[in-house]
Each structure stands twice: as structure tokens, then as C-alpha cells.
Length: 80
Image (cartoon, rainbow, N blue to C red):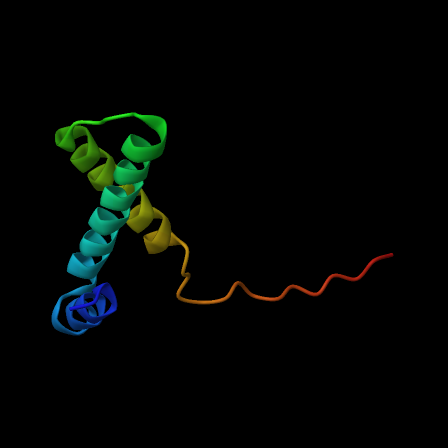
């Protein structure tokens, strides 16, 4: 099964929260693999998990406030 198939399955069978978590975990695994392979850096799994939790919380905080329910009113000003 290709990764595209896995992502498609998860995106249609899980909640948005679970999809975001899955994608962030996959992205972190890929990033940590690259750091170890190309830079020789190793990070414990607990540190990666802490980063994932902090990143997702920050992402959700920003997205919660970035979509206003109403557009601000247009104010017409006359210049004198």
C-alpha cells in the first residue's frame, strides 16, 4: 500500500484532529530521519513527541483565531 493510499484512507475515516496528528507524526519522522541521515543528529523519541504536541497546539491556536466569523465593517472616511 502506497503512502498516498494510507493518507486517503485516514483522511476519510478519521477526525480532523486525528488526521492532523497523523500527518504531523509522519512529517516529524521524515524530518528526524533526514537529520540523522544527513547531519548525524539524533533526538530521543520523547523529545520528538513533545515537539509534535507543541507544534500541533500552536497550529490549532493560530487556526482557531485566524478565521473570523464576520468580516469587519467597511468604514468610509471623508478627507478634508
